[in-house]
Image 1 (spheres, rainbow, N blue to C red):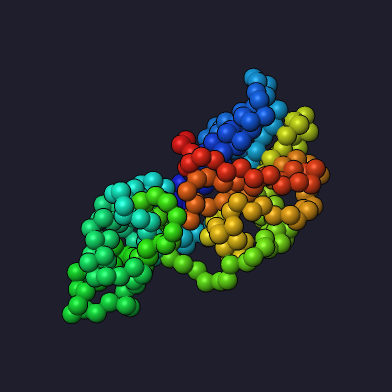
Image 2 (spheres, rainbow, N blue to C red):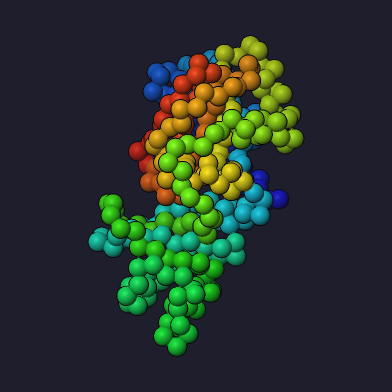
Length: 276
């Protein structure tokens, strides 16, 4: 599917940018996306010397790929709003028209405010009282609009429709999830190549949390993105580093967790959403 390929490529480039920024703090280190020309996705350099490689795996459910691809295409995760407007979020379904939501976002929020609402979904609206607003919801494929209390800034976040679950207070176990991705059929060829790179000092696996990731891990990562896990993982002997890339939903910047084969976690929270 084109949407899956597009999302995978976007995740590869985003991951490479994050690794590049993170590794640059070590000095003369850098990361470069090479997935279009090479068997593995990212090359790691110390100066001009190739010292490692990384493979990126996006844990996405194919049926959500089309809507996710539209978000990437239009860079629509966050829409700036006029000063004093506050923070809002819109959730949408698989049939949503992302570009149209971007274009009509301000008009939609004006209708919500005029109706005196701060949290609304189609089932809350009456045809005789809110016909214009209800029409917007149906036409654009929107499932809810929410005004978020507190915080700073004036912006709108676009999010895929919610999925149920209670947000864990501590990070759920990650070992079985990581193992399942490493052993997955679609990972076999690329990870066999990575594991055979015995002449390289650095062999990294990058996992991007997405719609196929267990719900409790997704919820924890989105609501506690800056609280790194404390679980000691059993990584394959050939793997030196594991990166977990946090979704942009509910965040104001790109965030990653890094786990070293030495047994410790490290948080990387960047100043904003990185360009690539």
